[in-house]
Amino acid sequence: MRRSLAVLLTALLAWAIAPLPGSPASASCVGPQVDGTRIVLTHEGVQTVTGQYFHDGCDDEGKPCKPGCGCQDDDAESPSTDVELRITQLGRSWTLGSTDADEDGRVTWTFGLPAGVHPGPARLLAEGASPVEVRIR
Image (cartoon, rainbow, N blue to C red; front, top):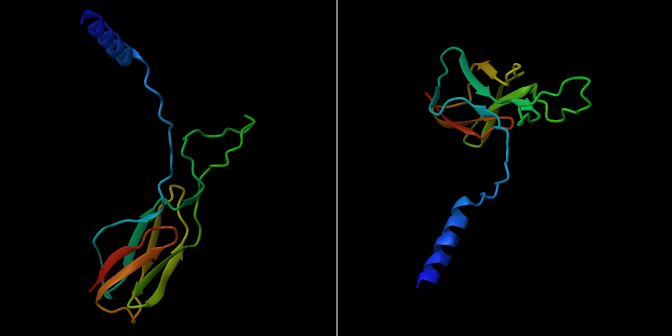
């Protein structure tokens, strides 16, 4: 009985002090997104919608590649250009505008709603981003 207890204690001790296997690190870039979850748009005046993470490339390591280092910064992020925003409703689609992202990947679209957009639910679509449900009043 003492021998099995000693074997059990040795096994538990070995398990407790053994190094844990390292999990492979996986990094990913955040994809573009339109800001807001409960967006309400109206036909009155000018509307503004913003978004973030609109950039090309993926600097997921956060290490800059300095000139003369002999490295290539293939993952460098550059702001997206001509990012189009569209609205869809009842099988129809309208372009609301396009804009360039700033150096931080932020975009701002300013627009008036087209006359054919009616009160009720609709969706905003920005290039590379998931659709966003909106309400038209």
